[in-house]
Length: 491
Image (cartoon, rainbow, N blue to C red):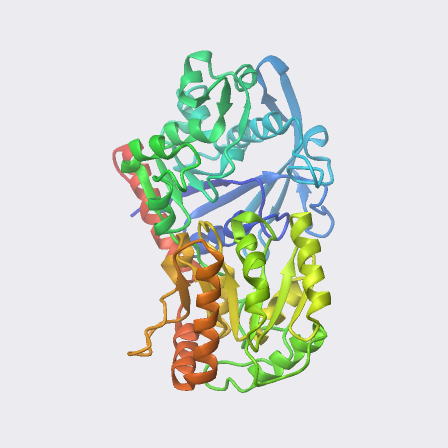
């Protein structure tokens, strides 16, 4: 087959700017696609956090004109760099009024009032940049609501533009909860015509993600289970009916992980490297993380790790409701994360009350995240919903057994322990209740203390599991070919 020209647009990309898993995906997938021989390029905003000197970015010659409907034409600068350790070009759209701010989407408390204009501008700039570069993509891969305008633009304003004569579109949904809902007046900024209002209408407002779903040639989610879940009332966030009606173009592709970064045999952050052939250094990593969190250095107690946002989605209220009962067990828990203020204060108080059993660091440190993955015996992810999840996959690689709720990517990646066959790689529960969480932690702790053979088998199974980006990239590749074929009639 012919190699493809792929343009990937996203609001955040590792290592340049990150608030969540979207950045990890767009920082890794293009490199895997490039290794398969495709011409892949990435576009993102140039926020203030993106250091021009650090990443050796160079300006493209000439400004980029971006039509913005009733706002007129806005002129932007474009910088070019590469994804680290690759030859994949990354283009940065710079317009200070929109992106010269401390945050990506908010000021730390509230979302920016002009997020609609900011990301409609970015989406339109992606199209204009392709024209400026004379790059004729076979597929434009948009991600989440921030770039969901692109499939709409492709089918309207740029429908007869020769630069995009055979260009198809893929819209990836990384988290359906966030949809880009704005005042309907943005129709005049988009400039695609009010006759398209009904395609993204939600009451008297505009829902950008909804319009993207309608117009995209294909829609993907970041796990197979999540693709099923978003068609339901529980996980559909009001769009389940629409998504169900377009289920014929819905695909689930599980995220991969970067095993160059998350690998106990290579990890420079952890106290001592280890692998499946010699796991004894994991005990040293355990003592190290206990010391880092001022917990007693006990090798005989199960250490449970948590790394994540302290928000409802992550099931943090389930843990808060069950924590006193959980801490009656002979265990230790280390927590790394930040989020809702009540949760930060609550778990800080728990650490004060139970200094020998519970410790937390409010905030995020990458070195501590690695140390927790390496030193913990068990890893907790009681999420209400989880489109993919990455920490459970990191945990598997480090022989740290995940305790997860069976939702989204957590259900796709974790096989619950079978006591009889000793098969599995973690522990799962279904009901989003404190009782189910407590019982499953109790099951894991009981296995640690009373079923050493089973626990060791679980660790071996966990460490042998692989979810690499090449496998994911091949699935995206097949979907890109399908999209391109639908547009061109042949590839």
